[in-house]
Image (tube, rainbow, N blue to C red; front, side, top):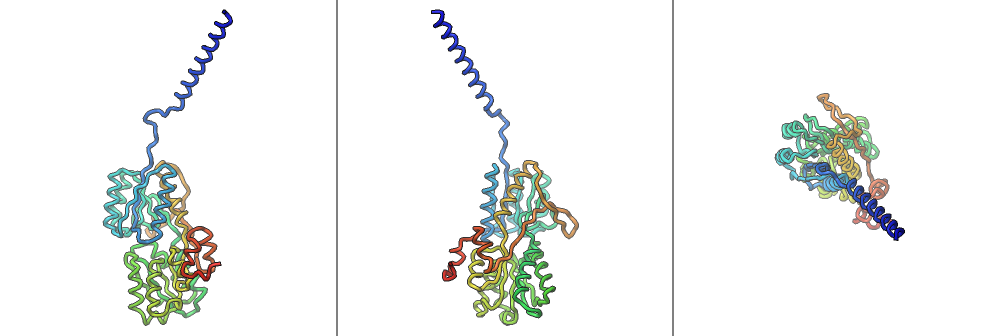
Length: 349
């Protein structure tokens, strides 16, 4: 009987220890009240979603930010700088941690950007620099090199004394000015004459077609047309086709839009400049979260014409022609091969 009692007491003791251990374990794993980390709030303001590339930027940025535990409120300004001003004010009122802006024009945004920074909100100038402002970060591709790559591509096909035209983006876009500068430097070096420079207000592609049509006589004189992006290039090619010059005049663009890659394999556009949008959007999202959490990250410096130093993440562009379409665009998964060669299935192998 005593033996049975001893066994019973031992079992009761073991059960008590197990229960106490279980309670202690449960206590350790509970999240103390009030200590749950709040999600980083990011406001993102786009120029528009007419351009194919902005949709890619949005999707990758949002996806990466969510993986990092942040929430992104995406807004579309529909090509209105006034709307961008209102959206910055909206995000200030929402007390977001970071505002990411693809600016349409710099001057109208200066006061609202300053107001955001005074409230302790970090501001990222995405792809285009907000001139005159001091954003906490500027992330973009090496735009001067974009122009250099266009110029070098023309230099491989044109000869000394040949003539070209330039259809650039608006003067209010610092990127457009840097691309122009890089291109002009190569043309000067190669002794290729630039007959005229046209600036498409608001990056509206229809202006490129209008310019080509209005200068039909000149188009028969030139060997190349440099376009500020692939949207402008597409309309320029359409207008050149009306003049029966598509494929006869070398056309350059940038962004490696699907339609541009199709034109390249068809022979109506000579080259484009590929910019790994996925890498830039991913890098920007990571930087935004790091900034919101006060963490350090690697960056270079961009010095403005006024001598202002701005934290800068510089991405490298790549020239694309028919020769390296497979390697740069298709192998990288930027576009599918069957899509690129949609109109030239005879070239598929």
